[in-house]
Length: 470
Figure 1 (tube, rainbow, N blue to C red):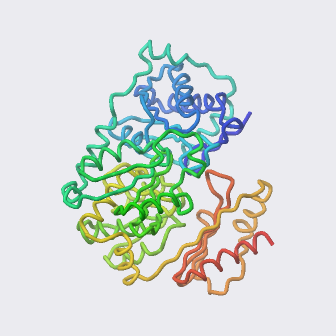
Figure 2 (tube, one colour):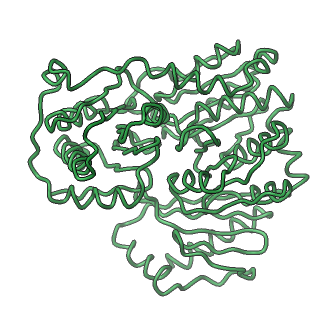
Figure 3 (tube, rainbow, N blue to C red):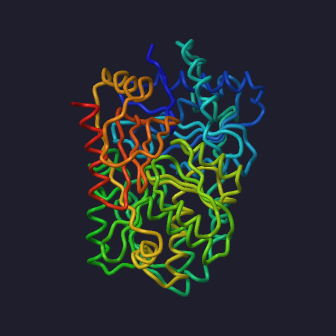
């Protein structure tokens, strides 16, 4: 039997290889057995799905298994972003929610994200135990979806978008947006976050035009992740159309990308810094900030300037959300493009983040680039470089042994301040860092480096690559 493994963002697999009906049903049966073991079968499970190939089918396969075991299912009638499923779990005090998605992975992937109480990503302990349960599952019983609907075991949920939208609108300065009258171009990247963001921006009387709204199993032939490379068309269109800025979201609406009016790509690290600075300086919020190991240290400098602390956690949003609760942080996020704000859901939400970003532009009266330039003058210029390397599975144990067991490191030009092995291998220098870790969702070795000198950041990466693959 295929081995089911949950990474930092759930179980993800190649469609037609491991992501097949039998394995989806095995995962569903594992979740059912986990619910029975924890005596949490009394409440229904909400199931949502994004717009990927087979997502709606897989959502029905999961529902067929759960209802066969007597577990009621609340089923999304249309594709929904992951943040909406998380919000619904939290709002309705459910124990479990499921989203069929592979988030920002290539179009030939799909997957399952498990959400637990309070709308949180399932913790590592839960998914590790679920993996063991699934190992012993082969054939799975199920009730046909239409039969389950007839019996009342599947209920199409009343519009959950309303409460989700209202909760965001109630905390955004909509009047500031109305007064500013922003013109925004939204690249939906064929994803499921389209509808809620459009409603919010229309309510704020913004002019918002869209790109790539249609459902497309191949995401227009580009990665469904809002990176500088994937947003070239958005960049050109924003400049040509004279928009205030452009917005893009990944396939399930939990990662955000921004293009400024001048065509500059505002990366995830910069978005985090801008929003934390805005919330504390302009809105008067107080509290620390949380980032993962591979996210910019400019956040540390900004927090320090306000007399606050920046907390570092491993990669995986579950660590960010739990630390936000623990220290009552204003905001938490990661360099891959996801963030959440205190008081909202416990997972990444690009609908909220994009709305807050629009509020920031409206209130400050500055473009994102202008605010960023002010931050660089005050805190320094932090340049991050990333190199993702696909690898032969045979090299993974060799690299892990070198870095994590033998703890051998390359010889760097700069003096090493400390090394962290909490999640991969992170080497800290006086003015930067480099981290090497395996992706939890794809067969990739990720190397991130940051420095106040962009040339030096590239040197950190090249030094690591030569050391590992010479």
